[in-house]
Amino acid sequence: MGKRLIFIHSNVVGTHTLLELVKNYKIPKFVQISTDEVYGTVDPGEERQFLEDSPFLPNVPYAAAKAGGDLMCRAYFNTYNTPVIVTHCSNNYGPFQHPEKLIPYFIFRATNNQSLPVHGDGKHVRDWIYVRDHCEAIDMILRKGKAGEVYNISSDNEIPTIEIAKIILDLIGKSHSLINYVSDRPGNDRRYSISAEKIKNELGWTPKHTFESAMPKTIEWYQHNIDWVERIKERDQNFTDYI
Image (cartoon, rainbow, N blue to C red; front, side, top):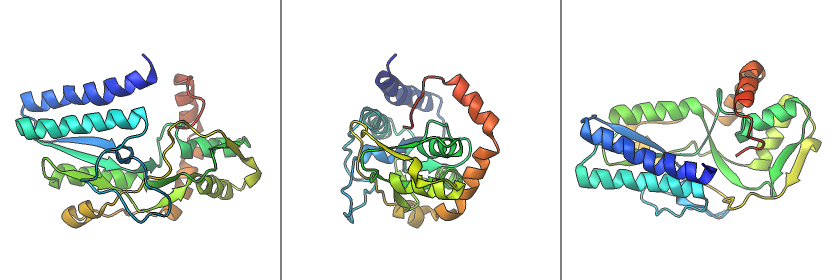
């Protein structure tokens, strides 16, 4: 099964399967974890942020598949009153993240004096949220969120990829000469930017970790858990680049 077909099977068919279970077994609440990628891209320098009612404009197959699952949730709520809530979160970082993801991927390449491949000009912007803050937001939504609602989760911490590379190199004590610009990825959105004002105002959630405080302990965790990373890399031998 190709990667794009896996996206569709997991995020559309898989979501439909879960919604059927929630409906048939009268499960009191189901939280669908989605992504800010469903909204598409915002131009750099533009003040606009995507809100929960912004239209879906996905530009890559993964985002389109996630949008399909989210729309299935909307349909089940409106048709069957299925108690589903949808969340859209920005990029996570922190312990136990798969080493194919950008931050752990850069950490280990920098630690091993390997080059850090930066796609395109490196100015693609993502909002970065510490994983514990995301988990606490999900827990609050599960306990206090209203069925049928959508909540964006972000930390308003937008950083270009090239700056992520430089920050990691500086914290590890390696030269910026390890940065290597490579061809851009197809469909690579320029910037993701979502507003988390709704969850802050309605449920009282706010992120507790700053990038400046969480990034050093993220690096430390990975450096102290090399064996875990090597086991993951051995198990998943097909990954060769960050996604």
